[in-house]
Length: 454
Image (cartoon, rainbow, N blue to C red; front, side, top):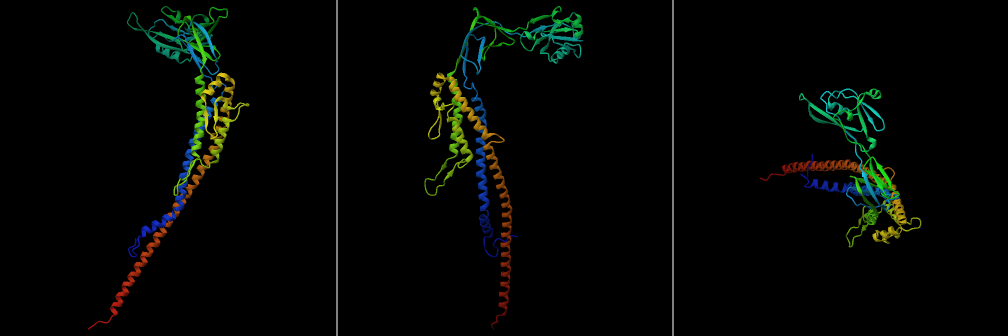
């Protein structure tokens, strides 16, 4: 029972609250520390995620052909050109004699029950596959062909009606891939009957037809010269140079000019994007490590989330060293990558473009090498198991858990303290009430002893 100053006149609840506020100061300090640590953890996790993303980008940039960028052109819309990372400047004329085609056959018309029994599909390489439909309908045979995994697609096609008005059907069979090597024949009969010469090729039956013969694409380089060379491909994409491919859509008797030229702007843009990623990361670390000192009395000094964090500080140093140290005696500043005396990483696009034009091999080597060093640094710090920054995060999380345990203990301690204070002040009010009652009784008794006047 709480008696809030009923006898003493004291504001007991306010007094207890004030005393509890004082007692809770250690808990508030711990809670503030938890908030601070959680803010640090969030920022470290965000930094770690950025590092992990940079690992992949650095790995790509460290490739021997990471700066390869080309502009590929064709003089005809019927031919497109693609150039890979290993391509070089290239120009030639191409004559497209034929495009690749898929082998396609349509059977003769047959009734609803004309498609049962055994069939044998023979590939261009002589491979035989026996096919036995579950029923006698054209749909049964088409389903069995499609399930045979032979690379042949079967489709039922309506073929009118017979003399009795009953529906007829054909089956169109088409190889899933183009090229001569994907030709096939479908025979009515088992493999044994095929060997015996009694199995019938469905494409030779009256009313059947070979719609298209499976054929390879054929191109000629240096047409009309002593060096004329024919290139073939089962698909319509043909390699015509080192990591250079053309894709054709139709034949053309007229030569088509294919040109591949280095894309200087693309090379510079790719390098600049990577260096800016690192520069942004360094700036982020710098901003997070700043301490803002109060300019006048009474103003607080604000610390950055990374201020005093040795792990982040060494990460910053390692990244800066990775991009500014020489590569085989060549300074990255010679290709436009430099760090100022204030630690700001910058990229000079014009200087880099000139370096690529003057000495592309050395420029690529310097860029790839420093990217490789960046990859090593970022992986060392961000590895999800052994990364230095990863361990820093888990250490902070462990500390937060320990602080949260302390808060829970303080909650119990403060509850007990409040209960003790409430009991103490309640007892004071009870005792004061008893004393007041005794005082009133004594006053009454003394009043009764006083002599009465006549």
